[in-house]
Length: 310
Image 1 (cartoon, helix red, strand yellow):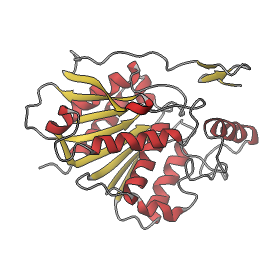
Image 2 (cartoon, rainbow, N blue to C red):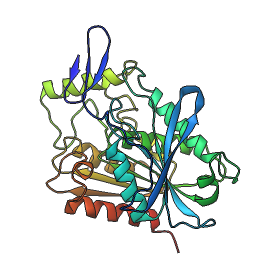
Image 3 (cartoon, rainbow, N blue to C red):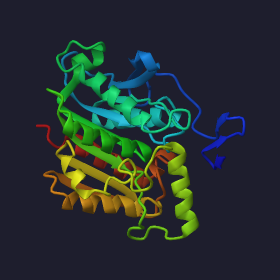
Image 4 (cartoon, rainbow, N blue to C red):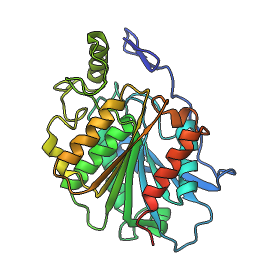
C-alpha cells in the first residue's frame, strides 16, 4: 500500500516513510537567538516535546505560551524535523513567545485517535506547570498561563482544533487558552463544499488515506476529520479567538472556509478570522519560508499572539 509521496507499507508490514524522516538536535540558533531543548512529557510512551525560548528572556519575564502540533498527515514528520525546528525558531523569535512543539505517535503503527490522546497528555503536562512547580524550569519561570495558544499546520491544525474542543469540556484551572491558529487545516467530509474536487476517484482516494490513518473511523463525516458534521459541537470550542489560514491552490482551501463559516454560525461566542494566501499551495510557508506570503503569514500570527498584551 503506497500513498505517494508520503508513506509506503510493504506486504510484510514494514512501514517506509518516504519523507519527513530527518531530525535535528535542539540548539541555540545563531540566526534567531532562540534556545531549544527536548523534554520527555510521557515516559510510559517515550514521548518528548521540544521547548523554545528566546535567549534574551530574563528570569522573571512572562511570555505568551504556544503549544504547537506538527503536520504530516498523521503519519510522517516529527517535532524534531529541520522543517519544524526552523519554523519554530523563526516564530518564537518574531513573536517573542515560549513554545512547546509536541511529538505524538503516528499512524499506521499507532492509528488515530492515539495522536489526539498523546497531544492531550502533552497539554496536561504543560498545564502541570501552572503553579510554578512543574518539572520544567523554562515553563515555570517564563510561561504566561493566562495567554496560552494552540496552533498547527495540516494534520496538526486538525489536532489543535480538537485540543481546543477538549479544553472547552475539561477546564484546567489557571490554564487559559486564548486562541488557536489553524494553518491549512486537514478537514474533510462526505459531501463536497465550495470548489472542492467532485471527482469520485479523488474523493475515494482521500477517504482511503483517512481510513489508513484511522481504521476505526465511521467515515468522512467522523467528527475527527469533519468537525462541521455536527455544527453545534463547534459552539463548545474552548477559546475566545480563532485564526484560520487557507491557501488558494490547496485542495483543502474550501474546507478551511467551510470551517470558518460554520464556526461563525455555531453559536460559539468568540471571534474568528480567515486569511487566504493567493497563488499558494498547501503548507507553502514551510516549503518556502522566505517568500512574501510566508512573511505576511508570520507577521499576522505574531500579531494574533500579542494583540491582548498591554
